[in-house]
Image (cartoon, rainbow, N blue to C red; front, side, top):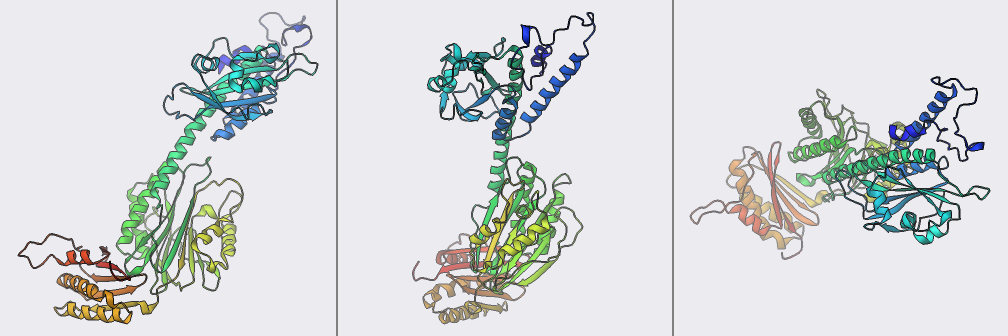
Length: 599
């Protein structure tokens, strides 16, 4: 910076620039005839120099006030126009480089910003040809400073023409002065800055004196570094955003009895990536777990912690624990990550479409909105608990009716809290907006919720998870508790057959009875308590056999002399899908069959 300021010490302040020399052509700050003797500093010089340095400092601060590339270029234009030039054109290399490493010499430039002129807006891509004046200006820092091009003296080619095109340059009036400056980042040239001064009112040619050129070069140095910083931040933001999105589900499962939709909106580019997440996890008994959470803070660490908590929540949900137990174990997991990690808020709900109930627990999160079948909407008053990671706090589950036709919206605070709107106002606005939303699809419910966002940039990211509850009618469910006895497989076979015939699914009876017999036979060999058998008819037939043994069955190749080991092979052969899930009190083995005839 000092290199740029030293030539300016004897000149007037650069912002605004003195466009005309004082009468007589003398130096502006030359001492008067009655000036003090040599060695004494005139009283006006220190103040003039201080004002000059303060003006340059304010300009540099404004140029570096944003991490967004477009805003950085806009600030550069506002600093230089009209203080230093009448108009400005900024060209940046295309494509935008990866400034984390040396991108090499630029191959092309593109106009990214203009101020005070329409010149260059249709210039398109400007190639940087080997051996051209543009390549020389970008790759070499001339010790004599920037080049001044005077359009009024026939400078219709060379660097100016390469930047704007000869046709555009030809529209400039005689006497126009052009000052071209390279924008250098920390490792490479990033573009060119072209300053334009129009002819003076009396028709005299314009010009850039050494003070003007030095001032512009100093600010161009700040501009190049600010562009470099903006490109670095943009790349980091994109990496963090991609990391977070890769940790979120691209598609949600669609279990029977409930319809789901989700939305995720990242915050503005000026804000770092957040830690909002959502998820849905199918559970035994056609139930589904619904989760929305928010890791406090905005950083790559927040996104990483979010990924760890989401994975932990999936594992805990698979154990079929009550909602408050899931939050308790998530709290333990967050504490194991270390005190330096962020806290998190979370809502965990489990919907049972057969019972028409939902159980919810809250860990310091914003309350969900429940929409009734009559269109009424309410913010659920749940025990708020403490954020995950605080430790030593109990969580409580609340069970609520969720009849067919009702809906639930889980969301993060970025939806309802903004810079100008407090949380309470946003919550009430959302509740009122969703009143009468019982006829909306989950996708429409998310879209309606987003309508409360004010125009402008968002400082925080937003996650939404909407669930429309359809339920499963009781007449489509058959459930039994069977004692672990030798005659139990035969009884289970008969019960399943009767249920299928009652539902008009006789064509599935033979295979289904065979698979039920095999699964119940395996269950009673390990169970110490009654075995459960459940059949559910939706768009397919699902059968679940549960026992209190945590050992999951595994298919194996049975030898020719072995009597056991073929049951799961039969199930795998006859079912469209099958699997096993370990629960907190045992396990469930299940299979599914399509309702249509044949396979």
